[in-house]
Image 1 (spheres, rainbow, N blue to C red):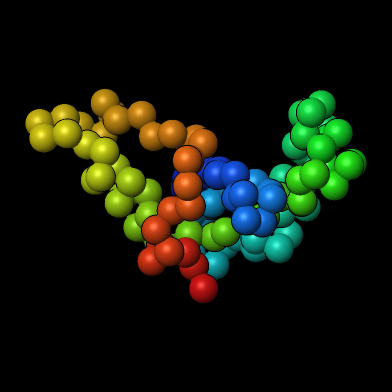
Image 2 (image 1 turned 135 degrees about the horizontal axis):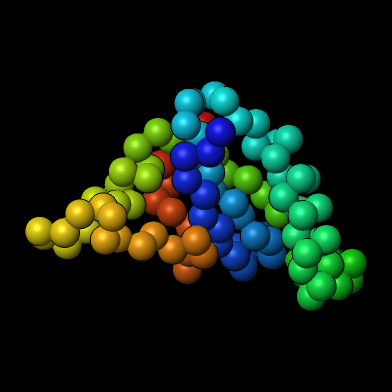
Length: 104
């Protein structure tokens, strides 16, 4: 099961990268998830499907994240005196997360 998911557009790779932290390390397989996510995007996203069909966008990719990534996101965005419940984490990231959180 997923603990957290966020996506960012990778201009270098010309694809969407889904960053996923699993609830239990090793519980998810990025190679298996990537085609499922790409297929879901093609089914639900009319423009995405056209762009994929014309090879303007490459298939979605999954980057599994290390345990602690979600905690670091909350820590970076929680203001002094606030609680995590007051923090709204973005689903769509402007850029790739810090490389130190990428799972090997």
